[in-house]
Length: 310
Image 1 (cartoon, helix red, strand yellow):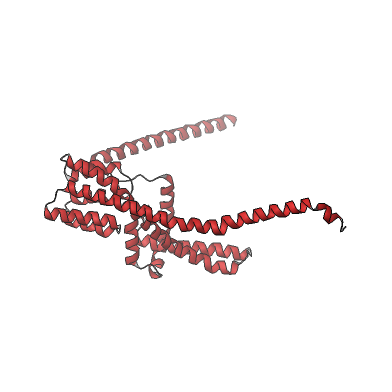
Image 2 (tube, rainbow, N blue to C red):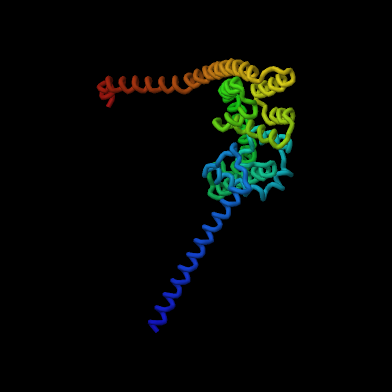
């Protein structure tokens, strides 16, 4: 009997080892096959950004919102399809968001808010009757304000990156390099919306899209005032035959002037905020601190006076 048990254990270990061996061989074969297919049939996109682990997790979570896309398209309060398309385009479609997924996302977070409010009501937290209504609204509107903030920040970043990009392009074009080749050489060294937009522009031109149409799509995808001035200047320069290098150089000078003005505007807006914080936060705190110290000193110095009343 003992020998039979030992034999069964040995056979079990043998088959487990055999299964692990074939699993390992299959994994290696699959990896080699993918690599071979990629090398033979896949053209790498030099402008594609690799997602971080955090972005992959968020993208996976956002995919769960697809189940609610149908409901979200019916409940389109403050989020019509054309508005959502505009926001997503200006923000660069973060986390691979589509219009349908965005509609599902706002319903998904509205349900999350309803669950949190319901839990608060069951546990009888303060103001829990209001949170059942407020949290779903916050979840719904929060997604809309988030994508609008993403779009605004991306357009501001595009404006901020333009002067350095224009200077580099101007120097490269003056060396006799063509516009398309200069973009191919320079774009990989930039990050953010400049890389994405001009990378997409190059790809569109390479697949046969007319340059005028590619410029027009750039204008439609971005609302940055400075970026639109640049693209319109390129279109005008191409029509009039003005050298592109001069266009980039002139635009870089104009962009730096605009950038300086923008910095001055932000500094001017920051001054009242600092004054407001100083007036309503720092000053009252300082007065309370000074008054408290004065009262403590007064009581300590007149302690004998209070002893007379005892």
